[in-house]
Image (cartoon, rainbow, N blue to C red; front, side, top):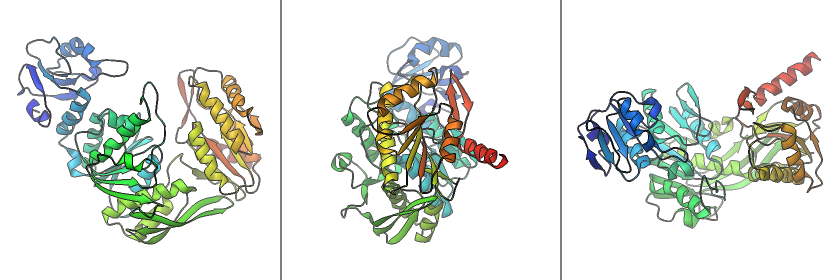
Length: 488
């Protein structure tokens, strides 16, 4: 492809060479450079791509995209831009033929609810006959292909490649999670979303390697509303006015507020042994009753968001109701049937904030006992362990402390740290380091009316020990435990 066509939507300075240069591939990983490649020098948190220029030139790179003047042979074209990450998004979009223009694009951001909402949207639209691609925390889904995710929002090159592959697979639409990091690092530049959704915002992802403070976090999140045609925002969020500040899109709102364009009314918990759900009535822009098999008030927000999007796709009320009834997300309040007497579920809650929200939701169903099984990751902050121990000690009737990705640490050391947090409460607990044994204990000691939650692993299907990942899926463990019980 001709370099000039790749630079079409960018401001740049040609430091040397010719913009008529032919490009054989677009690369940002120096290991993948080949003869005729265009190499984009990305400044990462650890590595600066500019340092690899001698290596990539030796491998045959003929075009360099840089942020500063560099030394290169005369036959190499050097293009200077202000921000190579921003440039990469537009170059990638052009390289893959602007695939977003051939899809209806839906971007979902927010502190919580992104993953569940993406799957709900996919479920509703597919139930109505659309073919939908998905990019998110768990995986990218392209037709029948499922690709495990490394980041919530991949690098812009991969976003555009996935879009291209979705078009090739016959997709009509794509729904994707958009992280604050993804927005900050321009991973979703190079196109404009048809729909941008803002679920909510709470203090999170604030630290040396993420956002310097809450204001920075909120600013990055709200960038989505300047990169979409229609913005759909949670009207109930206490930061609503700041979220929509400077938006350039047509705005719609949803929530419980009377000011919301799409509202939830008459919300009711639906609970019986082995089943938890919620029902409500949609009012405003649409009018019909909904019941979903996922518990909690936040499930109303997630489903209401999905309805607000799918309304634009002219999906019938009947299809929405039917699709929401069967929408499931692996590892997000995923109920696993093991007994008619008590409820068992798997959830990804792996920090204190998420665990407190989850346990608070489940307590609303007034269980006989709330049992929480969890561990904490090794090589991570001890504070998280203390906080999760304290939350579970305060809120659960029984805590089962076990192992979760101990990495290079001794599992017992991590358990001891969790117990420091537990000691601040009167909470009852048992400690069982082996996760399968711990789950078996939870199942075998389940009492009628209990809600048992296995927290922390969620969609993960491995246990990381001493630098190696071993297969371990809680669904498989549960199945093995039930099979062993039948043989006993």
